[in-house]
Length: 411
Image 1: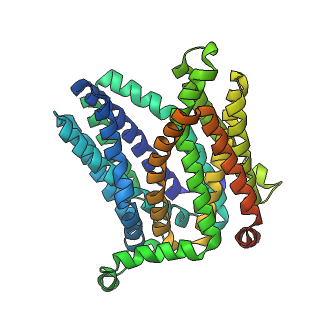
Image 2 (image 1 turned 30 degrees about the horizontal axis):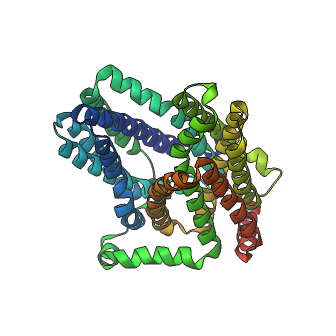
């Protein structure tokens, strides 16, 4: 992973994960204030939904903007808007003002995401994409473990209002860290005349990205598989509570067991990122992707029928490994197969599709669980992943994608 580390990547990741910590603090502080102002559980759901809604509404256009503009400038502007919105929550005294600021916060986050994902690979050589994505996956899992606890401690120690100010300050620092990043000429903002020509082509640019995804069968398959993984993972939170309560109650408190399972997933993700290159020494990237997808399905099925807590913990460690492998391969394939000036649109499309799928998954999963039980839903979800992996191995696009990636690795 050291090959992917340079001054620009260190600054990009330092700013991004500092902003991520700030976002977590702000979210916990928002929930704490909402619970002070209202006893209605629906109000907690509303503020969470308003933070998520901008990803569905604006991610596609944010992707187009990331391909039109200087991506570094777009990220910096988004971070400053995020800082202002979070800091303004210090003065919030009503639910409507908190809800409004939550929507603005989510909007700023939605605009920064495609720009960051599109800028990232341009800061390293193509041969280091895999190491770069493994490094990001490792950091993501580390912060998945420490962010909730650190955010909760900050809010408990400082109080919600002061926590907003701290989070806003961290976002400002994150934006400042982005300033020294040197972007290659291909990332610089197009000249004014080109912008004038393209200013009325927003929808055209978006549909150009859609056509790219649609025409490239292997890319379409990869994104559809990622959406399936998102669907399965998103329903696990609520279903795991139901499943643990029914089958593992003799081991202790349900909330403690579920928290333990989610924590070991982060540990598994760390292991997946650290040993990605070792795995690729024995199996090529695309076969590894399909194998990990099939294995994920099998593990979900085993978890559904298991009644031993220690076996369940081991399963969730491996689920973390598998999830990280899928994420690394998906990012690497997009970076290798999509032109630099189209990456923002592709990531915007992925984000636009992922959020509705995530929300739909929670509703579908719990609704099905009410009819057939959480165990049966896990069995269906695991089976669908395994079947998709098998079908994917038989598709012609598998061979084309495998050949493309193998050729790029041999250069």
